[in-house]
Length: 171
Image (cartoon, rainbow, N blue to C red; front, side, top):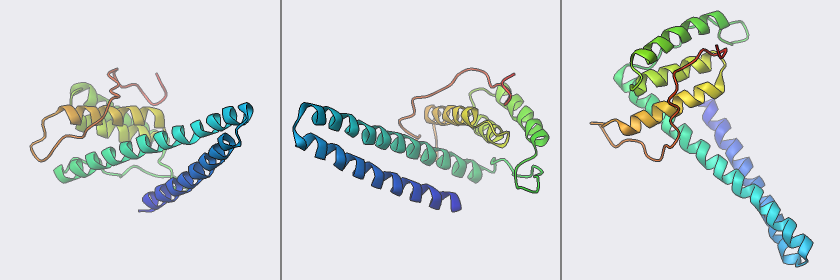
């Protein structure tokens, strides 16, 4: 719940910033000189990119949460039982061992979105966020392409990394 609140507060702050920057861009364009119009258009590009980025991340989070809910309903959500340091971080050796197990699962069933979802969680536990995101994107793409008897598949996923999973250290 704390993560959701943080996400919504951050999104609201960003949207406020985008409106503020956009209004400054419009103000520059209204000034009417060649320099201010050019600069105003350049300033307007920033909020457009920011809104697009926020929208894509929101879609990704919604889809990942939908997969988590479905996997939880099936009883396949990975259990968070890894040992933690006093700071709350997962111990690296335990995360690497869990990752090896999830990688083998994914190699045995490369077309199973559930295996890719669990691999994404293992990557995240091993603090390899870029690979965790790619594995989750793969899970979303596989879920979309798999017939779902309980409801419609998720839509609009384009990224589908098809390479074999690698270790969090990249080896």
